[in-house]
Image (cartoon, rainbow over all chains, first blue to last red; front, side, top):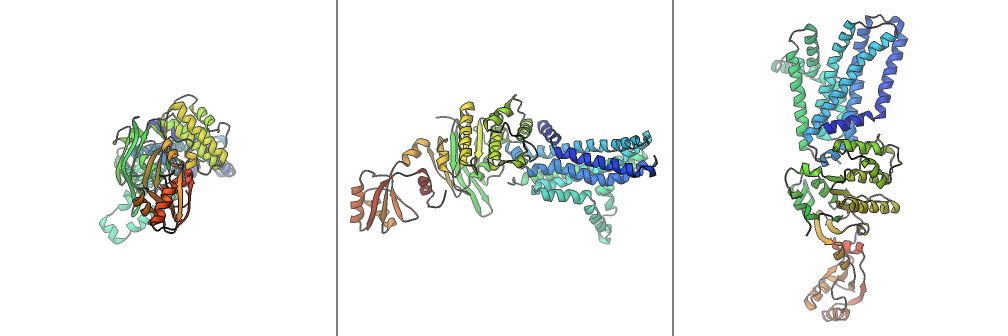
Length: 248
Length: 302
């Protein structure tokens, strides 16, 4: 499994479009901030970043999901891996670990970069602001990872890159969440499962954040829900992959 | 006799009502270059998919190195190429290095050796801009990575020009000579496989019709008697009963005999005595393609 993850890291680091994509995002943010620079105060950095995180969860999550998962489907690489005798369970787990690692790297760098840009423009961020930025970034990171795990079911069940990408985008853009929220507001659903919305990923991630902000151990229960949610998605992905024959 | 390195027993694969593989029992012995010959859609790729664990057989068993369970471990010692596909944005060197990382191959210079072997050592462009021939070459290099003792190549000369075909043939031969690898190579062009393979298996509509050595194949393709008559089926029965000669009736109504090559007069007499109108009888050397087509029971393209 480690060899596979090592190989995948090698592949991602040799994907030139990744450098171009993230450079464009970074430069875009730099120039946007430069243009708006005169109207921004130090305190506005946080609000600015919070809005940015919403967009970046789609832009970075979508790109990473495509690079980690759907590239494999486009290159028919799963055929090489399975034919080489690699267990399907290990493939699903390795991909999830890689998605988690790559998202973690990106979401560690994003708040750092925001602080760097503002510092260059004469607004250095305080330790408090940096902490707030990282805390606010956390739910986005958690959502990306969890939604990638859920989309894994489509990746391995259909083995079609377009279906897989659409599934991830529907989740990360909140389309699925909105539909489920609408459904949850229906009287009969509400009577069967009250507070159903709180247990969707769109509810769990903010609850973890709120728990962390409040302190104590109130984040433990939503975190446990998160782990169960992700683990269940991984198990379903494995079952789908084990059942499905390789698509050529 | 050399030890079987890959064996299938009654291997069957069905897709709903369609039987892609029907009871295929095949043996691959150490050091073989086994040519699996069949038309497009005959079941060659399905056979390879079942062997490599990419499709679940409906029935039968696969044994690699004598083992029928925990085949994943055995498959790690095999190299294969089925529809060569790599990451489109990586160049050939990067694609092979990726495969080396995944397979845990640490042999120094392995990637360069293989790129040189397949003639891609100077290619720097990404896989997405490769021609069909270059893709095939890289696919073969990928299959030979780490010098596996068993190599499976599905249609390695598909879509190649004559020079490309000759190059791939040389690569297969050289891989076998350098590492002593056992290869199973499929193609629908028998005459090409004939130049490299030591044994052949003929597959049609999912059925393995015949396994034959290179020498036996050439014995079979030496000569035959071609008979044109008014009723080929009846003539076949007459000859079987009269002189004990088993003939094959082709789709164009000709009768072909592989025995009694030196007794055409006896054949002619038996036919006439049996009430058959004889139009033509001549001796002819059968080409490999003709042998193949006759074996699969039709005159369709191979």
